Amino acid sequence: MKCKVCRGPALAGFPAHNANFCAEHLDQFFLRQVEKTIRRYQMLQPGERVLVAVSGGKDSLTVADVLDRLGYAVRGVHVDLGIDDNGFSSESTALCREFFTARGLPLEIYSLKERFGRSIKDVGRRFNRFCSICGMTKRHVMNARAVEQGLDALATGHNLDDLSAALFANLMRWDRRYLAKGLPSLPPEGGFCRKIKPLALLSEKEIATYAAVRDIRMVTATCPYSREAKFKRYKELLAAVEHQSPGTKRSFYEGYVKTASVFQVGGQAAPALGPCAVCGMPTTVEVCTFCKLWRST
Ligand code: SF4
Ligand code: ZN
Ligand code: ZN
Image (cartoon, rainbow, N blue to C red; front, side, top):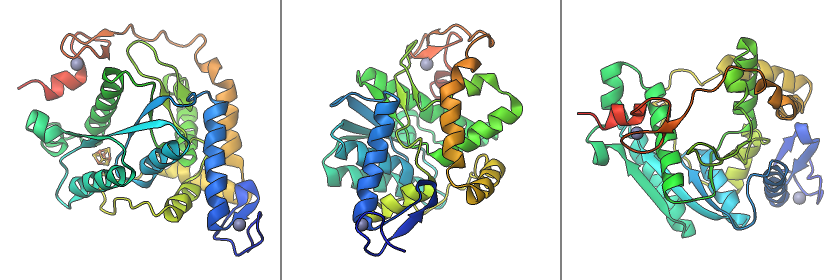
C-alpha cells in the first residue's frame, strides 16, 4: 500500500477518498479537509475565538488541536463530571489539562463537585438517569461559558459516523425537531452561541489515524454508565453499506445538509425561549432544568 502523494509506504487506506497516505500526507490531508469544512459551512472567520468542549476523548482533543494549528484562538472547557468508580473523570480531566498545558492554551475545568457539592454519579443515582442528565449538564455549561466569555463559536467533536447514524435514526422516526438541528453549523440565536462541528465530514477512522500521528493521548477508561454506544445499530448498518460503497456516509450526510431546510418549513413551531430567572440562559420555562437540578438544595 503506497501513499497517494509521495508513493512511500502508506500508514492507512481511506477508501471513501480513494487514497492511502503516509503519516506526513495524512496530516496535510486532514488539515485541508477540516479547513474546507469550516469554509464550506461558514463555521469560523480567520482569527475568530472559539471555545472547544473537550471530554478527554480523541474527537474533541483533535478538534482543539486542528483549530489551533489552523490559527483560530482556541480556549477549552472541560466539565469534570465526578464519575470516579474506575478513575474515568480523573483520567479525562488530567488528559485535558496535559493537552492544553503542552500547547500553552487556556482551559477551564468546570468541576460539578466543587461548584455544587454533587457529581453526575450523585444526581444520576437520585433520578436513576445518568446520560440524559449528563448530556443536558454539559450542553448547558458549554453554551453558558461560550456566551459569558463573548466567544464567537462553540466547537464540538461530532464526527461523520455520529452524525450520519443520528441522521439515519432520526429519519427512521421522521423526527422533524432533530432533523432541523443536525447541521454542521448552527447560527447564534436566542441566547445560544454559534455551534460548529469541524469534524462533520471526517470518519472515526480518519480521526483516530490523525490522533495517532499527532500523538494525542486520550482517555482509556470507559464511563461506567455507558451501556451501548449511541445509535449502535444504525452505525453498524451504515458501516456495512460504506464497506460495499465507500463514500456513502459522506454523501448521505452532505445531501441532508443541502435539503435540511425542508425540515424547518411547516414543522411544529419551536417553543418560545426566554432567559432563565436564575442564570439568564435561554429556556422555555421560568427556571431552566440545569438550575432546577444543580442549584436547588
Ligand atoms: Fe455522561 Fe453517559 Fe457519557 Fe457517561 S456515558 S460521560 S454518563 S453521557
Ligand atoms: Zn506520503
Ligand atoms: Zn438557569
